[in-house]
Each structure stands twice: as structure tokens, then as C-alpha cells.
Length: 272
Image (tube, rainbow, N blue to C red; front, side, top):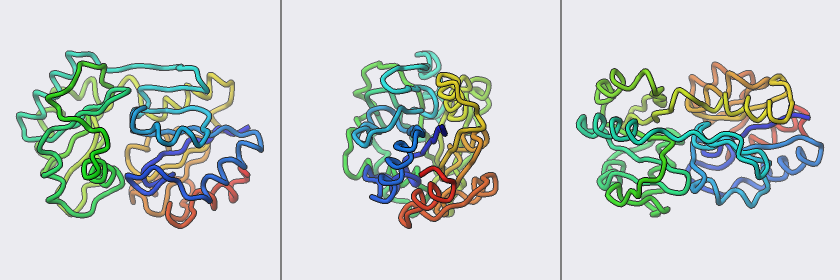
């Protein structure tokens, strides 16, 4: 049995959408029928990944590893503290960094983030997801309406990387600043991930829970927030549409998500 971990945006689906190609769904079902298990492994929180759950995944590594399930069982749940969140937002906001915060069941964003992103062009799969989500009003509420729910992750966007410097120096002990490949369009984007977890450790938690060696895990990703997963799994796969840096660190490059890449890789790796 292989444990297969699949990122969503730019990997399972075109960035910012919730509909996988039919070829990917057929491959996933065939892999499961063969006895393998397939998990979502994503930066999305539970609320933002929930439209994909009807496709029948075997569990999830959500919120970049902060919330992990196997079947219906929650095997890891680690939000940040209230103090950590308040400190992060204070440091980021006073340096002109735009933020969204993600709880399990809700997402809140700075009120002027939509206007900021509207003035940028291009980007990676993560920034495209946010641009589409804000444009389509996909249940991202204003920061002023934040209800105090435990938060797992802070997403950051800024016009210049240096605007993250103060937060990095003050928060670096507790959080990784996972910044995507810096694009030419002038918008730096990334995430503050609690050093207590990451996607790679989420993979290991599932493997340990099921008694499967890490060597029998396969991971599919496209951006630098997939790095720990790619470094952890027995077989690492990056999408052709993915980060140039992640491709260098992956054992296999498969066609783009829009070119039936998952189906191609599943067949090549003997998962179906």
C-alpha cells in the first residue's frame, strides 16, 4: 500500500478552483481501488478545502500540517495561541503587510487586500488562489469580523520582501516564513507556519498512524509551501506548472495540472 499526498491549488486543480480534471479523479479512484490511500495535503483550511471532500479522499493534511485527519479521525490539531496571533498581526500591519488569517472553519482578510491584489499581475498558484477567492467572494470575511476562533496560519502579501523583516526577526523562533518564489509583478506572498508542524510532519503523522513506512509515501506539489512534503515523502513529484526551485528538489516532474499531469504520474509510478 502506498500513501499518496496531493496538494490542491496548481496540483490537483487549476489554482483557485475546486474541480479536478476528470483524468485526475479517475486516477485517484483507480489508485484507491488498488489498495492505496489518497490524502489532500494543502495549505487550505478545512472550510476552503471542503468543496473537494465529496470526491472521496482518505483524509487530509490541512492548514499546512496544523490539522491532520485519517478517515474520520482527527490525529493532530495545533492552532497558534492568541498571543502569537496578536503579535504577528501587530508587527505585520505596522509594516504595511496585508494579511489573511485562517481558522478551521473560517477565513478573514484585511479589507483592502482585494484592491491590492487587483493592482498586481501574474504570480504563482497561491496568489492566484487568493485573487480568485477575493474576486468571487468565497467566504473570506473582513478582518474586523474575526470571531476569535483558533487560527492555524497567517497568509502574508506585500509589495516588497523587506516589509517582512521586522516580523521575521521577532517571530522567527516560533514561525517559518514560507515565501513563494518572488515574482516579477512586485507582490511577495507567503505564509507564517508554526514551527511545531509542516506538511512533511503531517505526512509522517499519517504514515505512523497507519503503520506505513515513509518510503512508501508519494507527494505531489507545485509551490514552495510543499517543500517539506517533497523532502519527506519516498517519491516526490512536482508539476510542470510549478516552482522552478521545487522542481530542482523533486525526483519527478510531471505535466501541468491542465495537461492531465496527475493521471500521467499515477500511471508512470504504478499507482493505478
